[in-house]
Length: 93
Image: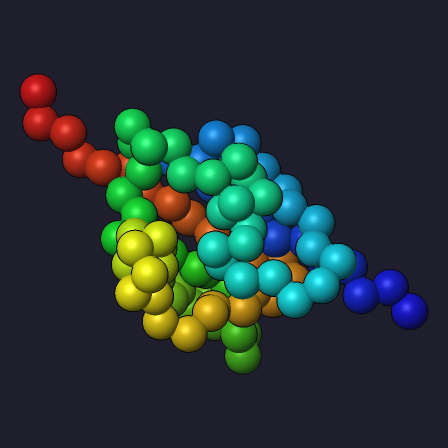
């Protein structure tokens, strides 16, 4: 029995796209698999995990910035076909 599953990482990461997981995968792991945050564009405080549960689309906010600074919360594990959305910082020109 294969335990691989796919998730998607979109937004301000270096290599957005599909990540194939062969083990339990956290949102942070998925971002790292996608080449990490784009330091010029990523808003690491407002990352969202989006997935379908009980027939509804649900989203969960995650502060990856706090994790990077060692103040992270519990790891947030992903499920098959979930999406990790890394928003861009709002820049005012």
